[in-house]
Image (cartoon, rainbow, N blue to C red; front, side, top):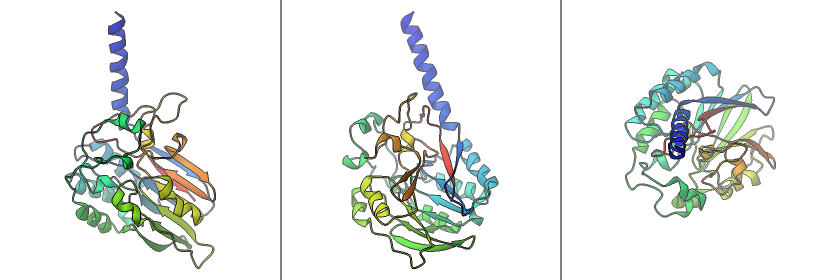
Length: 286
């Protein structure tokens, strides 16, 4: 009898953890007084068959966004590229300025991995994290640029939004070893009233350090999935980064910077479960 009860409980928890991957949320934070709304999207990990996720993205058209920020890991297969771009277009987000950087899963196909390995070390310390099968990154980038969004990895751009000058800098995905040397210092703006924004995919300490050192006003990252699995009254079980677990997701003030780390809209491609950590996008009013 006990074994049947235990099996029933485990099955129920597993079913809920699968169901929770479809309970998409919008999280709102107000941290400034410029009346500028930033939509932070990350870690969509889209398969072309995920209609509910695409429908949620389309529903974002009602949010009156001023700037879109995408911090990578958008797709799980090449078949998802056109459907993702089309869903952004249906949401009329092509009418909104946008900036983006990529994560490893915009370059390489996902492969099965044991999620428990991240209890011992983040993915940057493994030698076989990525699949050798590459994705069509050029087509994905072209799709985003077709929407009018700008690729900001390893460069700085300036936008004027609601009569406010915003300087935006992006860096490559730090947890891929070949990209670590590309982390660079942001430029000091000539206009001291400029709002400085930094983007990166994986929020490792060394990836955040250049932004924190240069007093970047707002820093955006993803990658952690909020831990993906949480327990009541306990922080994320893993973060897949070297940050403390309390920084797995949310909006935090660290030194002179506000940091937004997204829960993401997807999951690890071959581990489609979330528990007490529903998928989400963030709207940050600055």
